[in-house]
Amino acid sequence: MFDQMDYNINQFVSQRLGISWREANILRVRYWRDYGTTLTGLMRHHAVDPEPFLHAAHNFEIDNLININSALNKLIQAIPARCIIHTNGTVEHAERVLDRLGIRHHFHTIYDIRFNHYQSKPCSNTLALLLAAESATPSDTLVIDDMADNLRAAANIGCRTALIGATNPSPAFDYCAQEIRELLRQLLQEFTDSTDQSPKFH
Picture 1 (spheres, rainbow, N blue to C red):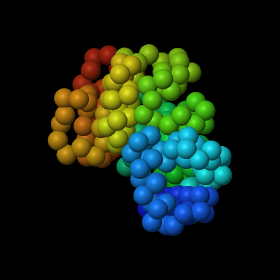
Picture 2: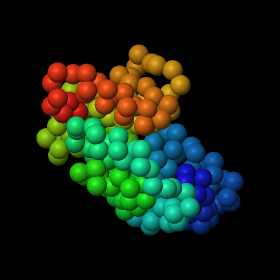
Picture 3: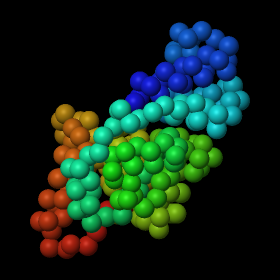
Picture 4: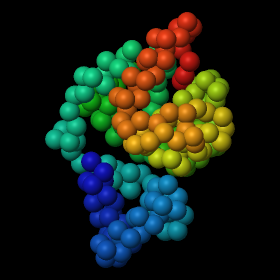
């Protein structure tokens, strides 16, 4: 899916800026590394309208890329916490992915890149605004991400953090797991072992 998104972004940047495919690819990666998203760099340096970019980036079929995930569905259902999505993509794309996985109904709200005027993750200020909108305190919030920089921004305002894709534990994060189901099983075990069964995380 990310390969397809990268292809679409390269095509958009090449056409919008009138540069070669190779130059577009270099620019895409550079802005992603510098700002967290290619879009942020394009807006800052080339006055690109974000909505056409977002439409182009996410304009591809996902049916042959994602399948129903029954195991993930059961694990999320068992977790006693309010679950939300915070994405650098769009609500529309997030809903398509969640629907295809069969887990959309578990998530109360989706906050996309439009939430704070297209400010992308990592951004502690945006996350603080999100928590305020959810009436959630940082200490009761677990932020799950596969990007360490995004989690550092969460830790900066007092959130607990879980890194997905980690092969080894790290003292920088509260949880580390190779994939999301492994993490959810660990959290579920903690909830089960606790005498206090009330939700601990948002």
